[in-house]
Image (tube, rainbow, N blue to C red; front, side, top):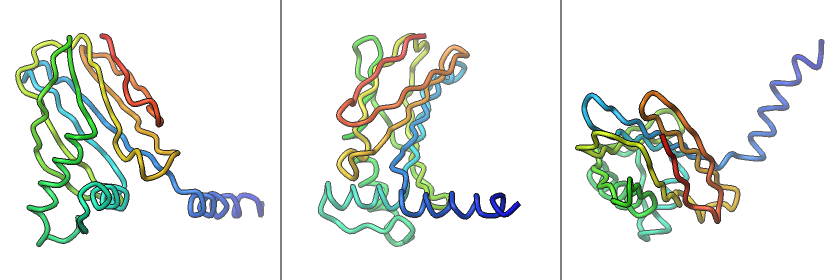
Length: 162
């Protein structure tokens, strides 16, 4: 009985002393609208650290007064660290915006005029450089199928075929 009470506390303590270094990239092909929707989830403090490191600027994503600056820097950083191509053609990611949910920051992008997505090449170095244990989990949904892949440094590319 005592173990049941202790287990959640032990799990919390392990998480506290061994933080996670994970981002999640969701890529969804909306066939009806011919749009590829991209959502990038990072821990807010991690993306703030990488933006500071990359652009030598201090940024607090929670500050409303820094919203325009944050939009520009998040867009610039993610465009530099994530690239998508289909059938040899680089896809142009259009930045939509970001929002903070709890400790996470969600950044949103889209690619217009994609009628079919049979093959997708993904380059991703998101947050590589913060911690050598950084993991980028990529989920792609197209033609009713969902596929996933995990990238850890130094591996920075993968391909999905539908």
